Length: 255
Image (cartoon, rainbow, N blue to C red; front, side, top):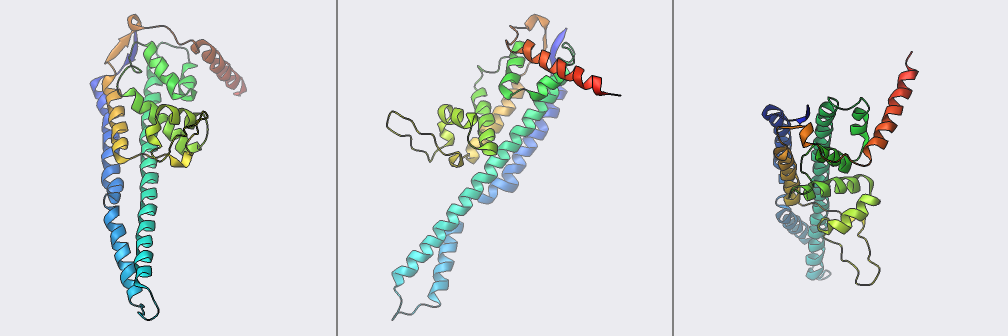
């Protein structure tokens, strides 16, 4: 009895949309921010020239014009940099959402072959770490692979991007502080957390996450059967009972 099947065609059908989305996100969106330093310099220069049109040497100090133009350029750079980070975070969240949805669809199809009907709503409702538990149950190594940390961090940072403070923010700051580059940890006994709005993802980190998702799918063997099964997750029976009650309750409501 097969417990998980992913043939070459399925793998290609899964990977092609992912790779297309990532390449287009870089080409059409992230590339727009490649030269924001030059743009800021141009804004500074234009503002200085504009101020020069009204400059009165008897009344005005040229140093004030330089300072005002400089601040205009700095403000422009900061605003574009914040926009770049928001766009990169949004693209990261979209890539992970696509990955998470595709994974749940595939797992629901495979697990319903050898598990009761309650496994379908279970798969669509459990958190991502529990999905990984189920895959490892079938004999697929995930958590020990080099790509897993990037995917785990991505799942956490997407939650922080959507919801702000919470368990994911605390865990991400503790395990993957590189996503809060502007935060300086306190030196006292009580460690301070970064603010959720300090979350930052660079284009290089976006690429690393996208590559990790690709490696995740390439890591899945073509098939696993019952001889590959490992220990069942401890939480599985309890959750199956809960979703079985859910299905039975909804079945009784049907006319």
